[in-house]
Length: 568
Image 1: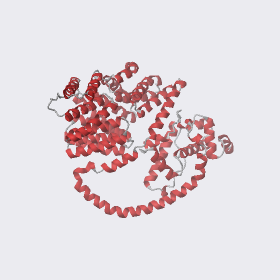
Image 2: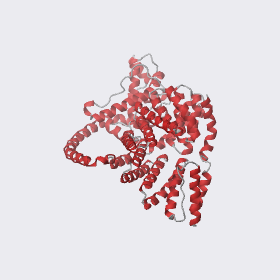
Image 3: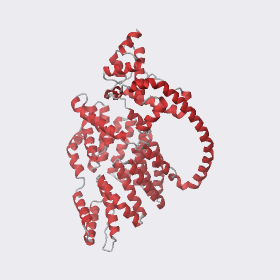
Image 4: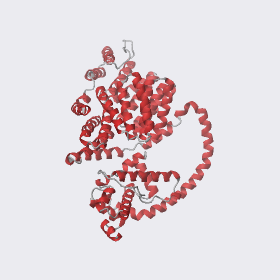
C-alpha cells in the first residue's frame, strides 16, 4: 500500500518533473543560445567554459574541462555541441540531443579525433532509437561500427554492438539482435569495462525475453544486477531489477516479479529515469491486473500513460492505454472506451511502420563485420560455400518451381471461400473480433481446421504454419484475436507476415482465423451439445452473439441454430 500511495502521488508530479528534469536546464539552454548568437570569440569562449563548469558541478563530467583563447573555434564548437548532446540525452530531451549531436558530428569528423567521432555517432544512433526512427538509427550505428573497427578498440566496439542489438529489438527481430549482443559481451570482457558489461547483460536479458527464453533472460539480468551492486550504482540496479521482473513474469513467478518492481520503482522515480519508470509501472500494472486487482493496477498504468504520451513513445503508451481499458471496462465502461480508442489509434500507427526491410539490408552489410578478427578463415569458407551454392541453388530453383505450382493450385481451391469472406469486410474488421473479453476453453484443445498437407510443404513452411496455428489457438483460448500480435510473435512485419501467410494458405490472415474459429465452433456444437449458442460464441472469442451468428453463417452456410437443429 505504501508503494501504491507513492505511485498515486507521482501522477500529479510526473508532468512537472518531465518539464524540469534538471535544476540547471534553463541556464544551460540560455548559455547555448548565447553561444550560437554570439560572433565574438571571447564571449563564446566564456560561455563554453561556464557550460562545462555547470556540467562538472552537476557531476556530469568526471574531470574539469576548460579551454583557452588559443583553442581553435571549431574545436570549441565540437566539444560544446558534443557535450550538449550528451547532456540533453541524459535529461531525456531527445530532440535537442539529436540537434546538437548532428551539429557535432561533422566537426568531430573534420577534427580527425576518431574516438570522439565514434562516441558521437553512437550517441546519434541511440537518440534516433529513443525517437522511434529505426532506419536512421541503423544508418548511424553502421557508421559508428566502421569507425570503431578502425580504432580496434574493444570497448568502443562493445558499445556500438549494444546499440545495434537495441535497434533489432526495436524492429522485433530478437534473433538478429542476439548475435550482436553476444559479440558485444565478448568485446566488453576483453576491454574489462564492468559498467558497460552490466549494460550488455541487461540488453541480453531483453533479447532473450523477446525470444521467449526466460531462464536465460533472468540469468543475464541477475549478472547485471550483481555488477551494479558491486559498483554501487543504485540507478542502474533499478533498471536491472525491472529486467529481472520481466523475465520472472515470463516464468509465471509473479510474486518475485512484484518484489523486484517494488524495489525498482521508487529508485527510478528518485533518479528521474522516466523511461524506465514508465516501463516498470506498465509491468506492475499487468501483474496487479493478472492478480484481479484492477483498481490497484490503474494508477500504475496512468503514470505510464502520462510519461509515454509526454515522451512521444507510442509503443509503450499503447500498453498503458490497453491496461487502463482493462482496468475500467467492467466498473466504468464509459471511461474505458477513450482508452480503447487511443489504443487502436496507436496500434494502427505502430504497425503501419515497416522497418524490417532496412534491418535486413543492414544485416546483410554488417553480418560479416562481427567476425573480422577471423577474416582470412571467413574468406576461405566463403569461397567453398560459393562453389557448393551454385549446385544447391540450381536444385533449389527446381524445388521452388514445384512448390509454386502446388501453392497456386491450393490458392485456386480456396478462391471461392476467400471471395465470400472478403465481401464481408465489416465482419472481419469488427472490433469484437479482437476478443477483449476473456474466455476459457475447457478441456483439451482440439485441432482447429486443417493446415496444408505436410508432404507438400517445405519444413520451414510447415513449421511456419504450425506456429501460426498454435498462436491462433492460444489467442482463441485467451479470448483475444489480433493478427498484429501474431506477426510480432513471429518476428515479422505485418506486410511480410501477410504476404507469406497468403502465399502459403491462399487466405488472408483474418479470413483464415475466422474460418478456424468457426471450425472450432462447429466442433463444440458436435462434441458438447449441452452448450448453448452464447456459450460457444464466448469460447470462440465472441462477446456478441449476432457477430458470431453472421460469421458462422458465412463460413458454414447456415446459422448456428439451424446447424444445431440439423444435428438432432
